[in-house]
Length: 121
Image (tube, rainbow, N blue to C red; front, side):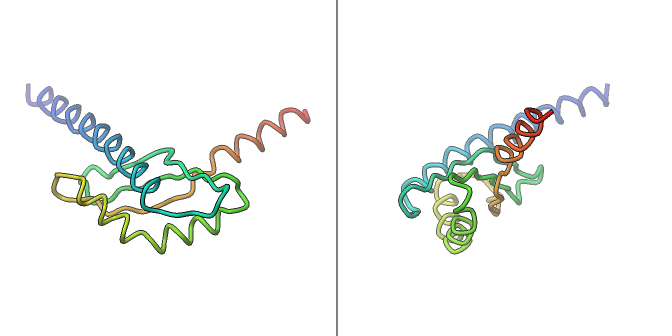
């Protein structure tokens, strides 16, 4: 019986993390779109959000196009992370407020490389 309660609690916590990840993803997309200025022709999208179970940290995976501007986007996001964090904190009504970290999502480029290798075979 005790084990079943633990499973219910674990399931509720994982569902909560999923909802928090979606909420953070929506807010970060809006904040980046409205508050962050990138040079023309550069597109940044949030591909995935991963919040730790204790809600203290959130890793935000961003997809960048074109790939040649990855360094530029990483520097811009690093420079503006405090403004983005502040805007996110104002939108989230929860405690603790997760500290954000941006990570470049290279999934698409790796998939392209694999696809090219498969075509060569």
